Length: 148
Image (tube, rainbow, N blue to C red; front, side, top):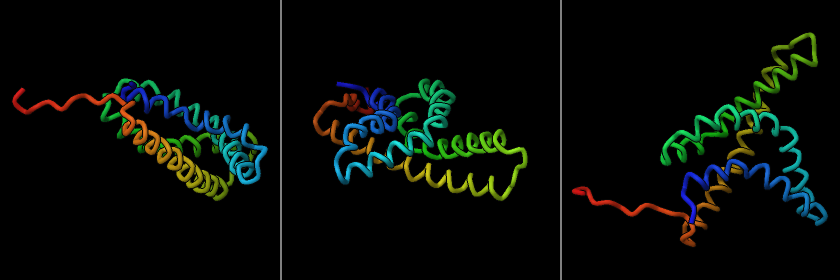
């Protein structure tokens, strides 16, 4: 049995693991397109995701279980911000001239893409959590009475 916080810590690696596992399914018809999408999202958002994990990982690790689960549900917003910042840095490095409108469009489109893909993974992690909890593989502390 695993604790809730341990599961959600492991679920932070779900985008990386699922994208790499999709390589095995790349040979099959419909799954080929899903595999390409997941690998594309790993290539586009992989570096910002790793930066986000490194920066916020230590802060998330110190939180208690309930706050950790709460903040994991809002992690795609942090990922959208990290994606936008990394995209802006790459744009500044590659182009001597900075176009504010292009930077804003990149920030908005990248943020929207990051939110959609991020909440796909949050939904998937929640479904797996409910499945594991129904199979009694997630440890839940017994409820204590008010007077104890």
